[in-house]
Length: 87
Image (tube, rainbow, N blue to C red):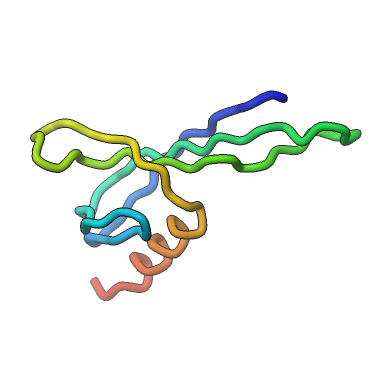
């Protein structure tokens, strides 16, 4: 089994919430890491998502960050809510 990681930057224009994170996160750019594993026994390459994590500012320590596990659907919901929020 092979595992690969994909990194991307997502930007929120408004403060937001993601299910599983108890606090509101400020607007800004966030690094998201998605780990995927190969699906064996196929005649073509295919991957299955096994983890999604987001790097957020740490509570109480100025300038520190922490990586938290989140659901990919929860991230998509937060992005959709941010896109539909009034500016």
